[in-house]
Image (cartoon, rainbow, N blue to C red; front, top):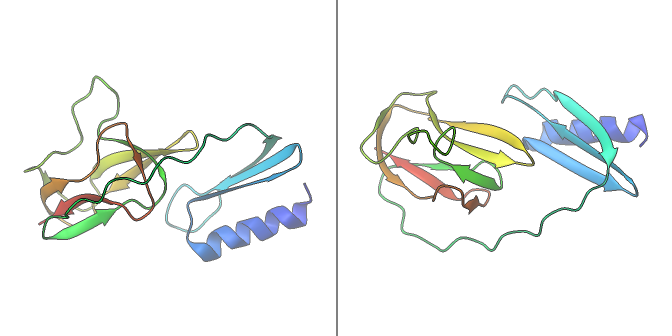
Length: 143
């Protein structure tokens, strides 16, 4: 893949606010992701194209509790804890501080920590452990 195309992809990633972008061209694939909200692209890898799993069905609509809603910043798999044997990061009634880890969303084999953007108490958890989540889907309500 041409380096000019990769540079354009990095620019697109920075302008769009996306966390990650992957483009396939014939037998080549390039994935560019950024680690933080600082806007810096941190990884670009060209690898042979692989099969991509089909998109999951959209989640059922659910009433969102009153309060500040934390939404999914990306499509991926929701994990409530760091490992299957660990306790969830938070549950209903948990007190949270700004910057505290609420969950993990796995997207394309990358584990992305979702952080609280304010102090408060978890009023509702809107996603199920191990289930797919969509972009902008409510994950938590904080009061």
